[in-house]
Amino acid sequence: MPHNRILFTFSFKMKKFITHIFSLGIAIAVSVGFILSRAGGHADPFYLKFTGGKKSSLIIGTSKAAQGLQPNILKEVTGKDFYNYAFAIYSSPYGKSYFQSIQKKLTKSDSSQVFILSVDPWSLSSTTSDPNDTLNFRENNSYIAGIDDPCQSVNYTYLFQYFDEPYYKILTNNSTAVLQPNGWLAVTLPVDTASSARRRNFTITDYKTKLTSYQFSSVRYTYLLRTVDYLKNYGSVYLVRLPVHPSLMALENQLMPEFDTTLRTAISHSDGYLDLSPDNAIFQYTDGVHLTKADGEKVSELIGQWIRNGK
Image (cartoon, rainbow, N blue to C red):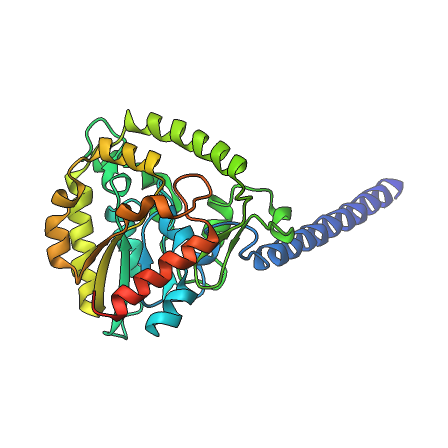
């Protein structure tokens, strides 16, 4: 009898312990779920782009376009609701992964859209010894390749696999880089001469290193052509070379000295090409590559007027 009582007491305590563990697990899961559901533009520079459903009149490119092209300004000038679907030099060069992601994000119900594709030597180059080695393209392990559905209300794939910060930071307020609902990444940095020069010098050093590994890729160029031709089914497609600081332009010219000549076929497939590099020196940049918010507004207005006026 005492033995049975001991077994009963042990069994009761085990059930109570398991119940507590189960309740704790539920509480943790609910808390994590709540935190993840709060992920927004302050949490991460890309996450929101993989939520919110399909979009029209996409802005395509790397971080130059992500930070430099402002959909609200473009809408004021053209009347079109643009969505900035540009990302970063390491994740959204032209290629199969980005092309497929664009196809998944684009709404197909409107055939009068306007698309702006930012082009530069980096977005058409690879870091592999064979620049056409698609199996080892730098974006293959990024969110661009890994997110199968970029239109979910909460994208758990991104949050579990590609969100690099501790989850508690979702609830904090990062005021330096804030991703807007229209896809524009608003970056706020000091733009005084000393701060800008310091960041620019760092960027120049970084891009000089890039020169040793980046090479023009004919495969990437083919995917640029495919992207242009695909988007032409849904509206007008414009190619734009955004301005950069003259010191960074010198490096781009080292990578691809005959850029416009190389781009000739893509230009002929598009509805127009605007090269803003002759005006590099008149704009201000946070680091030599990315336009300040104020000058991004100016450039967005220039591009909008160019499109509105029929080039």
